Image 1 (tube, rainbow, N blue to C red):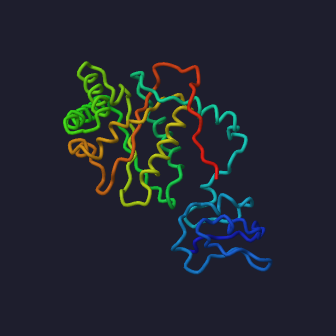
Image 2: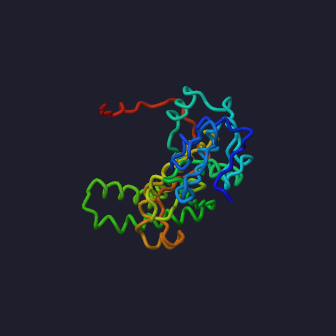
Image 3: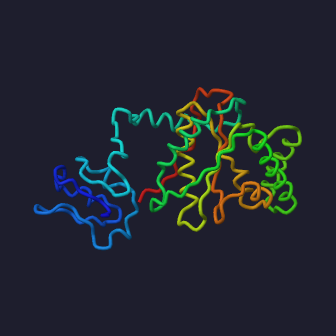
Length: 274
């Protein structure tokens, strides 16, 4: 089967699909012919769907991406620049959660949205692990605390030692500063032999947390957990990720206990103009 097909009744031979193909494997059309595939082009196609998405006439279809599976962009549903900027500025990292669990359907909706995040060469190799049981999440936090206790005596960075000790002291006094009592933990993992797995997972998690905020949920990046997830053997064993995979980020998630009403000041952007 050909990599893509052209509907001759719809194609206007405007060359847009060829111009926008990231792999440059579509030969532009001329007045006598329609766009065609470069010889051996199948090897270099990353199946990104740019050609399908950019054609204003619905004239091109990828073999692996039927046109019917690609819904049109509804421009009236896109947020304006002001609304989007306000959302980005208003989002806060949440560290106090209600015990109310997030419905499974909504969790699935978050992940379905996050899968649209860009990945290097369109590999789409961000994998997810969703923890839904508070007791299990608490157990993971306990492993992170054990890791911190191991690291304190062998860490030369004194400020880091003081931070670790405060977190451990809080835990010993019944306060969880690892998972913050969140009812859910969402972990992003990926094969470690990809070109940019860290960036792929970080961008996908960012998509997830921004959409979570829009859906009335709160998130916070689980930095202590992420650090321990790649170093602490008991935690690595408990996660049981697929062979060759590594945790590249995680967020706590749940319904915020408190609402925020102001956008706090941030430092000016540090820019070098060239």
